[in-house]
Structures are given as C-alpha cells and as structure tokens.
Image 1 (cartoon, one colour):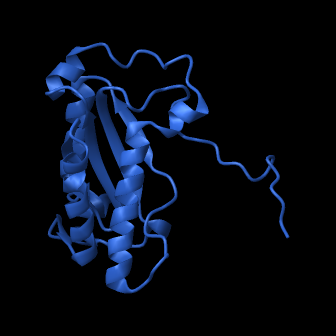
Image 2 (cartoon, rainbow, N blue to C red):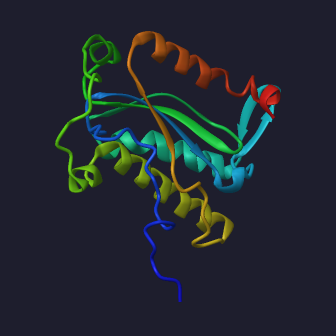
Image 3 (tube, helix red, strand yellow):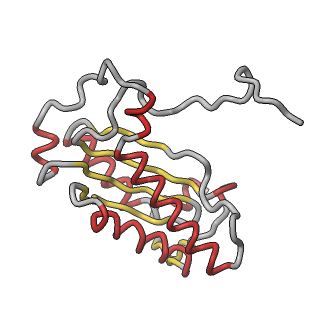
Length: 180
C-alpha cells in the first residue's frame, strides 16, 4: 500500500498566490483535453467543425451565465483538443472593469478555506464536470477523464491585452496548421 508522502505527492497550484479569483475582472481560460486527444471535431478550411462532443462543450460554456448571474462570457473557441474562453466576473461592462484599477495586488489574508470558495475555480470545475459527464454518456465511457486535471488562467489587466487575447481566440482555427 502506498502512503501519502508530502515530498512527492503534492500538486503545486499554478494560480497566483493570494489572489482572490472571485474578484471582479476578466479572465482568459485554456482547458486541454486529456492527452491532447482530438475529441471535439476538426479544422476544415481554417474553420472549426464541431462534432457532437464539441457541441456539448459549446452548449455547456454558453450556459454558465444562466447559473451565475454575475458572470458574462467573452470570446471563446472549442478546438479539436482544447478550449479557450474569456470569463467576465462582475461589472456590467468590460470597459467598466478595464477602466478600474482592480488587479494590482493579491489579498494578503487569504486562507485555504477562502481559496476553495473562489468563483473562477468553481465555474471551471462545474463546466468540466458537466461537459465530461455528458460526453462520457454519449460515448459510453463513464468515469474516463475528458479534460486534463488543471487549467490555465490569465488575468486580463488592460484593454490592449483584452483585444490581443480576443483576436487570438477568434483566429485560433486559422493558425491551427501553423502550430500542429
């Protein structure tokens, strides 16, 4: 029997230490399919052609604001082996968020309990869980991971970054062949 050894059985978070991921702001998210398997469709003529699994991902992403009223979605793209999207927490407009100085510093007194209650990880966790369950039902593979264990997140701090990231997401299918 293997015993827990904190020296070798630990996962370091890639999240920004002491940052409250419930804060009003714009967040760029990337999720990858387990083992980078091309599960969600294919690129045809520089356009993403979603299959039934990709349609599930798209549908579940678009449902996020229905379950979280303080959430808006920006640009997104389902790719054959990954997903990119922008989540907007709080404020009524992107301009209101980007116009304020909200991302300067982490919160100094964050506890592990506060970290588990953060909005962004909860949104991503639920999205991954619901989309995985539906995909696995359709392909009759209960319990098989669809997504890699973690996700990449980037805090969008200004309008220039927002425009660059939005453009990157929109053009991702056109750039697919260059990167693969």
